[in-house]
Length: 168
Image (cartoon, rainbow, N blue to C red):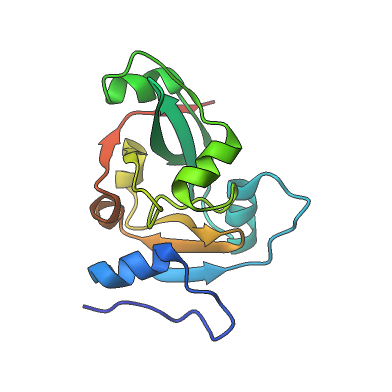
């Protein structure tokens, strides 16, 4: 199995990359220069890496009946909190406060990866990810993305697919 670690000497190997390597999951690490003034992290990644916004996924942490859950949806969509809650049988879901999301995942907002979290959260990946050979998720820091097959993302996170994205 070919596992890509072509990330150069100056890149920090994040817990996300370490987890993928440990599992033998084929992936590619992509770097770009993050603009600290830009708070639209997923859109910035898609633009800087010249990728389809439907293929680039953003990682959002929600509280579903007060339990942290990781939701992964395309940058081109919004997360449907109602559909997210329904997907896991919760009564309701709300966005998790950023400080709490950082504490439970071990990553900074804008660099939260669904892979290699400090405490692996229950993870839901929007079903549209299956439309692509590869998807792109945060690599565990701002300016770092990882490409991998959608089913490998599920395997690395023990996730499930569900219809949780709302497209405009």
